[in-house]
Length: 611
Image (cartoon, rainbow, N blue to C red; front, side, top):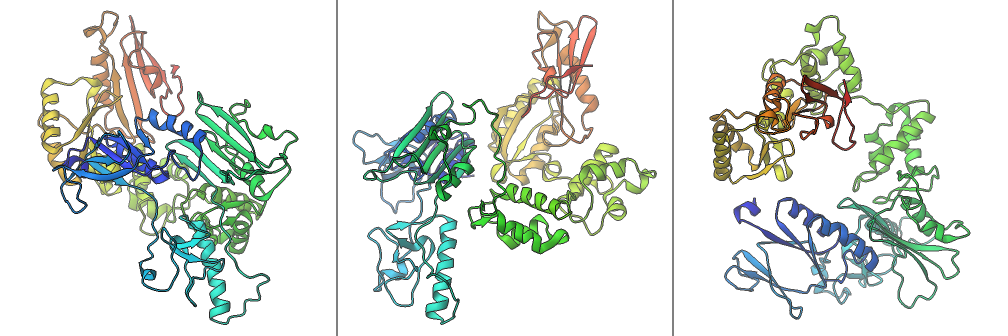
C-alpha cells in the first residue's frame, strides 16, 4: 500500500544479511528498483568471505538488485531537503558519509540491520554492560549482580551477542539448571557444572534460490597459524566452496559453500564431530556437479546423534525415541513435532522429520497416514475413486453427502476445497449452486488471484488472445481508476495487480460492460487456448488459428479438472503458439489440424505426443 500511495519507484534496504537480502528481493518483486546498502565490505559477513560474496553477488545482480557495500549511511533526506531525524516528510534520498558518494534517490527505506540489545533496565544499575551494549555474562549466564542472570539477545558472552534461536535455547538450559541449584537449592545431581561456552553457528540456507552454507570455524582469525585452505571458485557456474583444514590436513575445521551445498550434512559432521578424512582431503572440495554426479539431496543419516533440527538441537535419536513412546497409533506428524520440538522453530526440517516418522513407523509395523485430513480416512485419489464409482451418484453429489457417507465431523479448510474439486471434476455443476460456492478456495470465491500482502490480481479471459480496442480501453481505464499494475502474461492475457478485495465487485462490473469475464487464472480447469495469428495475417499460415482457438476456448471454458489445463493452436508447422508444450494442442496442416496431447512447459517440460 505504501508503495502505491507514495508512487515509490526506488527503495533502499539497509542491511546485507539474510533478512535484508530477502527483503530486497521482496521490494524488487513489487516492481520497485531495489538497492542493498551494507556497511561491511561484503554481504553476509558473518557467514561468508570475499569469494562467497562474489559468487552471491552474481546471483543477486542477475535478479536486477543493486548492491552498495562499504556504505556508511549518514542520514535520510526528506522531500523538503531536511535531514532532521524528527522531520516527518517522506524520504527522498539516502545520504552517505563516504567520500565522493552522491545521495541515492529513494522513496522508501527498509531497515534490516541486525539486532541491538535492549539493556535499558541495566543502564542505571551496577550491572556491567558491554562497550557497544549487551549485559555481560559468564559461562553460567550470571551478570555482575548477585542473583541476576541474562540470556538471549541481551546477553553478551565473550564479547559476542548471539542472535539465533539455538544459542538462546542453550543459554536457557544452562541458566535454568544454574538457578535451580544455586538460587533455589534444588539438587539436580549433575556430573558437571552447567556452562555455556558458545554455540555452533553453522547454517544452511536457500537464499534467493541459491545455496549458502557455512559451518565450523569458517573464518579463523588472521593470527591462527594452524590453517590450510582449499578453494573451489567457478564464476561461470556461480559456485564457490572453501574448506578449512588444519595445517597437517588431518582435520576439517570449517567451510563456506555458495551455489552448491548438497554435501553440507556430511561436511558439517566431519567438522563438528571429527571423522576420518580421505587420504587426499581435496576430494571433498569439488561440488557434486563438477564430479559428474547427479545432484540429489543427501540421504538422512541413520546415526541417532545426527542433528535434524538445529533450532531446538533435536537429534534423530530424540525423534526416534518420541515415535516409539507415542506408538504406532499416536505417532502423527503433529504429535511428533509437539513432543520432540523438531520442526517447531523455522520449520525447515519438517520434511526430514516426516521422512524419519515414515521410516520408524515402518519398523514398528505401521505406516505414515496419507489421510486427506482428520475428517476423511482416505487420500484424495482414494476419495475420488469412491465418489466416481458410487452406484448411486445422487448419494455423493454434495459435500454434506460425501462427508456423511465417507467421513465424519464438520469438515475443514483442507477437505472442503478438495471435495469441491472432486465434485467439479466428476459432475461439473454450476459452482454457485447447491452450496458448492462455500467449498471453493479464496481465489475461486473472489474470481481473482490472492497475491503477496493480501492484494488480488484480476485476469479477464481473452479467448485465443483476441481482444477488441474497446476492451483494451476499458481495462486501461479500470487500471488507472483503481491504481492497478498491468502486465501482459505468457498466456496472451493482461493481468491487473494490486486490487483490494472490496474493490473486486466494482472492477468486474466495469470490465463486464465490454464483455470481459474471469479468465479462471487460478482454478483447476481450462486456463487459456493460446494462438498465433494464422491465415488472417500471417503469410505462412495454412488455417485460421485465431478463430479455431477462440471456438475451442469458449467451448471448454469453465470445465473443471483435477489440475489446470492449457492449450494452444498454431497456424502452421512453425509452431509460434507452442502447442506441443501444452496439455492439448493443435497444429494446422493444409487438411486440418494435428492433435498433440500430454505436453507441459512448467517445472518439468514435456514434449506433447502426436495423437
